[in-house]
Length: 310
Ligand code: SAM
Image (cartoon, rainbow, N blue to C red; front, side, top):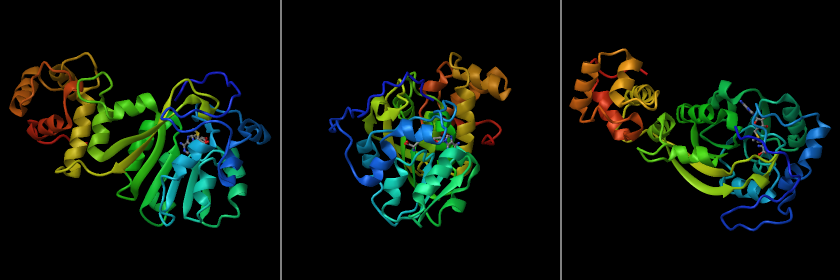
């Protein structure tokens, strides 16, 4: 979750990739939900909550740019955390099937009223993490979200665990978080979430969004990324579960060597772990953060008692 700075009251978040900035423009559908956000929140008695990651989009051009990434009007969309509807109203304008899941009941109610003229769109009140994609939409869907940063990791896990129901996701996340997702082994940003995501998806950063695009204004930059769920080539579901478990164990204690971290987390003898690492061709003095996905897969295959259960 971003730390919030006092709202400057300024509008027009600038995009640092050279996109134009300035006065609010755009379609009526987007403008309705991005203009007058503080007043709209006051009208329904909502004070932005850090716990719920409530940083609302106020730059219509950012909203339009995100909505334009979902080109096919026949593709069902699941939106996580629609808030006041900055993205929802644009996405629903095509008449497509859209289910927006909102945890804050006051926002859900206000959005429902706004979406009433759009029969293809509906609001589900509740926690996205407790839903099943197959109950939300009729077929393979695109997920769209200005993610509540407080649930970024569980939301990514939710997306890739929907059994093929999610074809693609277009997500706004903190820039630093996105850097962790694509970090190379060895860097300080590389961690178990990096390995997890590489096992389950391709990720591509599309563009950067500055704090001025939100109310309240966060202290950090954000990026919009595209995530395409897919299994890591050549692996079974059991292997992927085993690698997830091992990577968490091997990177749980950052300053430990891989051998010590695994021995401790898995309750194994140090000598047994060192022999295992040697068999897999991995030096036991290395740290977990330096291993590539392929090396974690090799470790999982060579584990003495067979693959580790997930
Ligand atoms: N989409 C809106 C926008 O761009 O202006 C709001 C985005 S705001 C960053 C995150 C939204 O997610 C808020 O409306 C918040 O209430 C909602 N939210 C937080 N946790 C949630 C959860 N677990 N499930 C569904 N919605 C959630």
